[in-house]
Image (tube, rainbow over all chains, first blue to last red; front, side, top):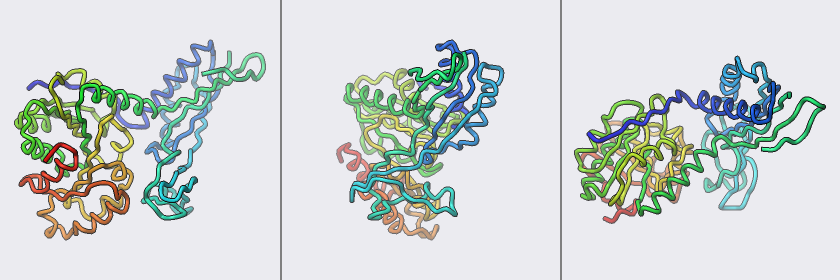
Length: 134
Length: 224
């Protein structure tokens, strides 16, 4: 049968994105003649299915034996922000303090309860900045 | 990137502002341009494991009767089972194996289309990996997205996975012939779908008999 196989070698979301982050950090440090990476700042949208804890874990693991070994990995969560197409509301979707995953459940506009909204923030994984020593 | 400030002679902050999830979106846009340039209508078929994606694609191919004017990219972790089932319907097929990755991404689609002869292809179906969670986050560049769930998964799939159903142009409830045995009410699922995505078409099907398939063909803009 005429088919070709394309293999992806990334075993899971957190590992694959952490690998990309580490690669970007090390490339950036090298391009800027950094001898040591002291810290990195990452922001992860709460609607992505990425666990900040696991991402941080993998980054630190992958930093071992490199100029970034021991670097501080700071991770901030980006809260969801929506633009409601029904009433024009711009803002967060509110969350249940008793339920840390409430933002992933059936979300609606807090003002008019519509499900017709655009997600403006909460789906990103941003490598904001890194701190290097020359 | 730019270096913004020195914290003394030796230490620098480098602002990157790099969104690592943006890369898939930009690759998806490139795929879409490629499809538009070749006048190919690309459809991303997502759905739960075992919901009937392959069976539905087979039924749609039979209904369309376009032979080699249809191409299919079958995505799965391993094996070529889906591709082999689809090939008998006469379409051009390629199997993409993701290994352990639980969704297709725009990069894999780009690689797949580079390996296929797409001259004369009018429609491309992309069968995504069975999963109601991750594929929604990874656009592939398709023109339309169809999401399948089936009555054998119980009554709560749409409520539990709103984000993927929000992305759909067409929502399919398959295996409706088993609704009574499963004690699942298709009308309730239709209400759930309309609540979170009133713009999507909701179609009840039995992929094995072909029930609902003409409606799918119309809803996807493939004629009747």
